[in-house]
Amino acid sequence: MLLIHPVRTLPSFLLPLAGVLFVGGFSITSYVWALAGLGVAVLFALVRWATFTYVIVGDRLETRRSLISSSVRTIPLERVRGVDVSTPPMHRLLGLAVVKIDTGASGGDEEAELDGVTLAEAERLRAVLLRPARTAHDSAHPGTHHAARPDARHPASAAPTASAASAAHAPAGPSQRVVMRVPRAWLVYGPLSGSYLLTPFALVGGAVGLAVQWGNDLGLGRDAAFSAGEWLWGHPSLLLGVALLLVVAMPFAGGLMYAVFTWNFVLLHRDGYLVAERGLINRRSVSLESRRVRGYELVEGLAERWAGVCRVWAIVTGLGDSETRGQLLPVVPRATATQVTADAIGPYQAELRPHPPVARNRRLFRAVFPWLVLAAPAAAGLWLTGSPLWWFLLAPALLLAAVGVPLGLDRYASLGHGYDGTRLSVRSGSLRRSQAVVERRAVVGWRVRQTWFQRRAGVYTVTAGVGAGKGGYSAVDVSAEQAVGFPSEVTPSWLSPFLPDPEDLTTTHP
Image (cartoon, rainbow, N blue to C red; front, side, top):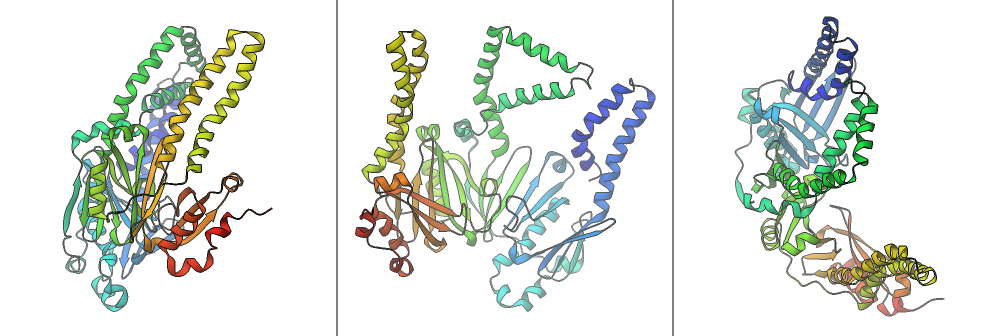
């Protein structure tokens, strides 16, 4: 850790060190000051290493950091929702790992982080921290729970072989089953998601920003960066060539970044947990407690739908940072995703019901009307003045209005909702279509809402409140009968008395 922390903080020291060297003219004194700065970084790492400890006492984990004042954080083991074990490049070279503990109480941040434990200790900690979820009788018999996990103190710098008592009470090796191992050939689907397509532009933008920020410190002068930009702007053919080169590089750079993050993706069933492991440079292992998984969400962009592939996220109660920690599958064929989710979580076995035709009209109107509004003054200007410049506004507006017709129809075709007796499902979207499948037991409430425009059209948005994932999943623009029937079908025993009849919903009030 005395090596990892200074290297990690080196980017923040790089600019001051470069400034010291340039100001000092690369003299002996400037090198001495630069070495002193590096020494400060090492000293800071030493202090962090020496003042941090963690301890597992009975049914809780305590992390302590003490220098001038003492800070103690206590986490009950029963509140642990997931353990994320990752091995960044330097950690992997040194045989270390980072253990992040998520209790779902801190939003997108982990509740605690143990940085620099050995790989063996990371696996032991994962088994110990996740053990309460696998032994349901522990909560009913606190004495047994405490006896199974005696006090064992493990400083962050200590080796995993902490004590004989801890080793004697360590949990048995987990049972493991491979649910899905993503073939490397499927990495070609990565650019379809669009997640990393802008990587070339981001790299160029970052380089330009560094040149502007560090120009004076590197002896180039900030004006040199602006002069280079002005020269490039004065050569439009070269600028166009650079832009085309970046566009051509988008799928290659995006595919490369996607492969780095999802390399050797494998989904496991491990002793009551769904475990997703992935990554080439930083190997990451995320554990999701199976009994807290309430469903899944299938997401597919327009290009992904054409290729017949999609991505999958788990809907989990009490999970922070679900957009990254909840990923069950990267871009895989949709048939495979359906099969894997049915095996790992449970199938959805019903057809989605279409929404009323007025929902189609609303989508066509919103996709076409704004462009027609823009085309109207352009057409009037062309008719009145005869200037061909109006075509530069009229032609794109008419083209986008024409494209809006199939887009609106596709958005309507993507709408749907259903219930198979165990799980409900809602779907919407076109450029990014999402279908959520949620267990009935996860529904904690309903919200039936109408905007002013929906009231004019006689449609509703019905949201199933769920204590997991995004907190709610909506069936958009359903009819009055569906607004009553869908919630009543899913939760008939406690919802029906509070909803009016469909005839009451269709009654127009002044």
